[in-house]
Image (cartoon, rainbow, N blue to C red; front, side, top):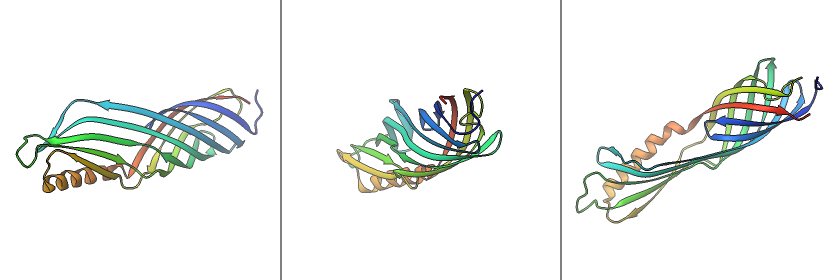
Length: 192
């Protein structure tokens, strides 16, 4: 049987920001500190048509470095608060579905959320076991990413009207991700 008080665990996790690792330190049976990192990269090469625009060569990199604290308010549930350094980036090209003399180029877009993202979640299970070696936990919550920064660069000829329309559509579509859903499934091994 392990000691009931403090301890250290190392875990692997699968999150909505990608797979990662987590280190958890139990201050006492009710409070834990944790630090972790996640990373996931995805490339999508299929063309996506949407009205007068076609998207191609989408690349998304999701990743975080996080610091937080857990309060185990009952034996099977906890609340987590923390801060993430968010290095998520999304890049893709947009070109006219039907090119013409004023619109025969490509716009390369780059999107990034705020670098610092506070988060809150509610978890089921324990991030570090009280008296066993292995623990399993599941968290659901939200991270505040702020408004996406949208940068663009034009290659070839794209009219100002078309560029403004596409950029505004991308900005309004990215508003959904101001509050990013947080899902986390973790398995941890208690070292001591």
